[in-house]
Structure formats: C-alpha cells, structure tokens
Length: 129
Length: 142
Image (cartoon, rainbow over all chains, first blue to last red; front, side, top):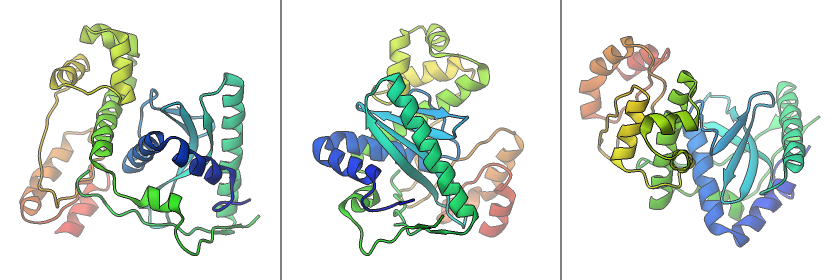
C-alpha cells in the first residue's frame, strides 16, 4: 500500500489545484472544518457513511472520500483522503465508497500491526478561526 | 503489510493544505460550523430539511443552501433556525490570541466548569473543553 507521493489521490488533487483552484479552496475549508470538530455532522456537505466510516465531502462538483484518524497524542485530528472524483453516477459513487473503505481497512490493519510510519506536517493553529 | 510515508520536503500540495485559511475560507468555515450545529440538533429531533423549513417558515431549498454553507446566513435566518430547534442562539467575541475549542455541552453541570475558569480566561490564553475531559483540563489549567 502506498500513501504519499505518486498515488492516485495526490495526482487527483494536484490536477484539481490547476483546473479548479476555487474548488480546492473550498475543499481545504471543508477538511479543516471536519478536523476542528470531534464529530462533524452535516449530511448536505459531508455525507457520512456509517457502515464504511467514510466521509464523502461534496463541494463545487468535487467528491472527495476520506476518513478520520488521530495522531498518537490524540490531537490533532487527521483527515486521510483516499480517493476522489467529479460529480459521478450512483454506480461510480458506490465503487468509490468501496475503494475508500478498502483503503481505510488496509490503513487500520497496517497501523495495528505497527507497520506504519506516518510523517505529517503540523498545520499551524489559526487563532482567527 | 508495511506503510511508509516518506517525504523529503513538502510538496506544493502539502504547502497548500498547510496554509492558514484566508478570510473567505474562514467565513465559509464559520457557516459550516453553524450548519453543523443545526444538523446535530435536527438529527436529535429527527427533523429533516423539509420539516425544518416548515418550522422556520421558509422554502426547503433555502435550508439546503444554508446547510451547504453556500448561503450568506443572516442573523434572522440563524435565529429562525435556532428557535425552530428550541434552541437559543448566543454570540460572542473573544480576543484574537485566545484559542477556544468547543466540544459537546449536553449537561448543565458543565456551566459550572465555565464559571470556574472564567477568571483564567480573562487573563490568559485558554482552551475550553466541554465534556468528560473538562475537569482534567481545568486541573491542568489551574
């Protein structure tokens, strides 16, 4: 399993950054909002799929699938993006959700086995938020 | 299975997500936070968007726009939503350097915690944690 550079999600987000900067800003805000809440509930903006424990972030025609985790110190909260796409059909959505859930399971298994080395950039606390 | 995340220096994407939110994003975040509060109360009361719209006396499409974070919320809309949900809407301004982390506040007993730390809050940076961890946090702050 590969997390980091050269993954599909990174390529998707990099392409999005060039093609839809406003959408990316909105996505950034959405992810920041999820991170700042313990259990953010908003089915319009973030469809939470309880069975799969996956968030579908919907913004400006973009769908991003992700899940939440915490760093070992319990804080801050992480949002791990798994895959994404543009507005798609229910069939494609189900496929994306399944894929996202599979990535989440693989991640959790690797974490449980201690086979994970997660480097992250700590986002500066924005005091104006 | 082994997962390694190795990055020598931040990529453009990492830099993008590490940036503090700009003013417009902060406005959008506030709208989403208000929408989140409304959604939580709707869920507690088993209300869907149509029923909330009925109680607020507005069109369901406006409720959707409100929860989507795209509508510029007016104080009137927020007041209508809170009253439709049997809630009171309170607003506050705090010094810029203060950090406030809001968590759930379901019991009246938590108000006691707030009054106990109020002196500390006025004089220094403080963090509010409502809920079961509040007592520990209060001890740490003291």
